[in-house]
Length: 241
Image (cartoon, rainbow, N blue to C red):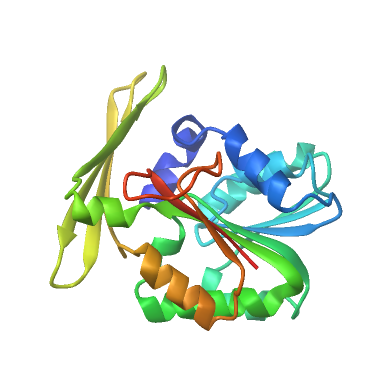
């Protein structure tokens, strides 16, 4: 059983809906008839929340179990929301050119790609499927802070159901970070551990790639309150057009 199959039943306890994310999307894409694509949708938490405000939401994720859970939950959605098992590098196989009003890629999904070349590929495809005034919304961890300050651990997520520990181990030779996680299920004391390599993408690198892909109007924030990004920000959040 894969890691994501194991954690799918507990995913909603680990990553609860963030109202600030919803407000950020609504402020950036104010039209209710906008068609949105949620990349790395997991079990559909954000997609389903957005379907309360938008008439057409599509969520994609590479993990089949996550998509199965999301489809089950979608039966009670207010507006149209669809879920598909799909790689973020195959947008141009799935969507028509200039057909999407907004692309959302939150939850540090972007840095699961293997290289700057793959990120460039994704950004190029995103620009192609977005309408001329469409928006690309991104959220990743602030890797400028992680690398400069040699941060090895992210805050532990704990509630009545779970403890989710997150640690980083940076390998400068390959420019990758091992993201090591340990999930403890309190009711059973079951422990689920995983390690996955991530690409520590820096603000300057991402800004350059966005410009190369044709995004000319980019705003950079340090959180979903739209405060200015700095080296001490917890995240790097971008609204690009």
